Image 1 (spheres, rainbow, N blue to C red):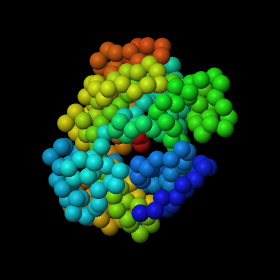
Image 2: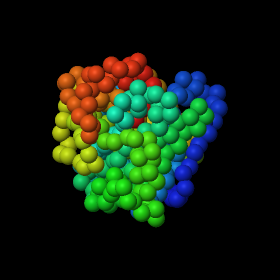
Image 3: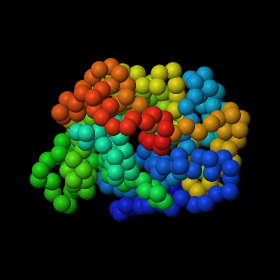
Image 4: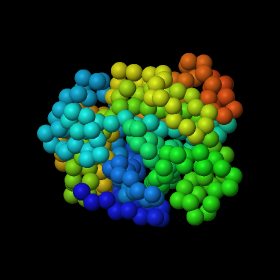
Length: 294
């Protein structure tokens, strides 16, 4: 499987499709990294993504089905060589404009992601417009993460763009979301294919640019998020999977579901220790599974 590494941001137009299933899922497609490789600074190729929420027993059957048809993620481990843990810091404004999808905040999302106990982290921005979807990703050493909030970031630092965007958008870390993932990969007619299973999702408030132990409050308990990632058109193996297990697409957002979970616990989050119940009720709330998210 081949990955193309770039230094500039990449955008992708959503092509038209006559496939009824793909047309039904069209608004759920988001750009994503296909493999979890690392480098100092890179932008990954974009891909289409479709999500499903299933019960754990259904997820287990789908995973077993996929193991005879797709290869394990080469960057994963575990008994079958296809699992790892992911921990993510999500950012929002003091008024939770990202959560409420106010104005341009509804089209972009910033986060810092760490895989397992890796000594590097990924700084990410996902951008959505009416016709374009793009993702920008840069890798830095974990030890350099505090520099992101420094007022004197060097312009030649690979993460300079990320630090500048956070400052301009006035966003800061709000919560840490961690989960267990299985990942299988393959190759379709247009390039890489990726199938992931996320479960054991937990969330905890955070107040700064640092990772805590992967603990917290359960999110989407007794449910597994299954995600399909591919380019251009859904390959036959994934179409077969959807038909075999009678899957229906869902537009779940881990961030929104996690924030709502913290709110139900009566917790505060962010550098200003915001009252989440008040913050989330200050705008028109929509379901965490109502629109595309990540």
